[in-house]
Length: 466
Image 1 (cartoon, rainbow, N blue to C red):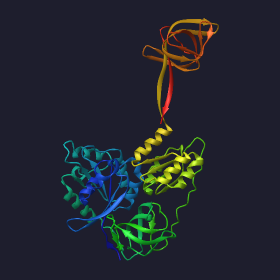
Image 2 (image 1 turned 180 degrees about the horizontal axis):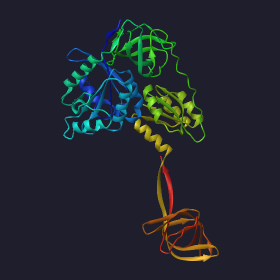
Image 3 (image 1 turned 135 degrees about the vertical axis):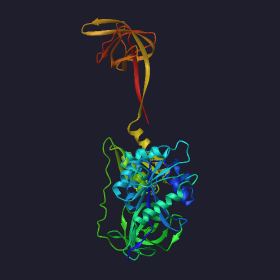
Image 4 (image 1 turned 90 degrees about the vertical axis):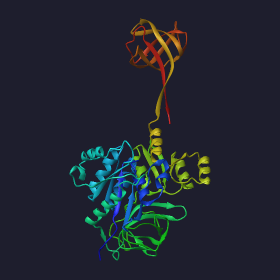
């Protein structure tokens, strides 16, 4: 029998716009202060009871651009969305993307303008910017509720909760606690001690300890259920977020788990890619499947992922990397001492990261190393000669040295005429491979550049750094 269940509320918005800080205030926790780099990098969920005794389930999503799939997944599971916009920054790139995800999910939503305690906060400017996205708030004659809040002072929070409650009453979510179980996997990982784990939100039925779990086939038996405070629960009713222990493998995010076999087909296993000539080969280990998903979405086509999984780096990862000249990248997981020692013996690079954009920047530097120009020497053209078809530049080296075959830049005042190479060098009647400061010489350029007396020939070299 269908009954009203607590609303599932997803929090969406640009990075550093106060999503986690707002939830910390509601929950009286300090998650934001503990986050590496000050940004959320995981999807997380919890349930709280308001002063009025109402249960609310929240899904907090990362705002960084890399985590678009997490935000879309949160939107698909939720009943209500909160579009978070900082009152000082206004609409930003991920604000637009979050708004698009909400509209695509076709769920009720409200705008929450945060950081209202800051002197530079301008809620009206934010509301005006939102109209350009097709979001017209009630103040401006539109249908979308808006709340102006401060997670530092608590201003506007009661009104925000009242609005959430009103939206929930207008669109009451329902489920049958006695019906067939449907629990959506919002995150999953491999724990070195607990084994495969899945964080789920129950959408229908009741999840209980001891029950066998299925997708299209048996995927485990519930050994324990943990809430967001790591407390054991005997069961989880609809809208309850819990972590399941007892699975036989790490389920894909977005999977629906039931207490009966489902008719949907299992995800098709994708064979591991093989190393391609000219590619950068990596083995990827991350804390949760959502992180793997976000990192993989960032990868350049020149990167080949030989293996990816959750959990700590293992000796097998090192042995797999060795014949393919692969690097092992570890994101928020451990590298045991024995594994680090094996990597040293096998000369396998292993790099550890805690913030996703640092990993992304590292890969970008490997693929596109910064090029530094080094000036090796400089000569001024003081005369010109014609020998057969060749036009010879008579020069004097002012500093450094110039080498035959080396790259040079021809400059005229502040103007760069072009780049070429020193086809030949001659001191008097003797061919030379190199000329140094103080020496006079003749030179030909290939490809030819139309030099003039008074021009400068600058010998240059380029070095890549990674």
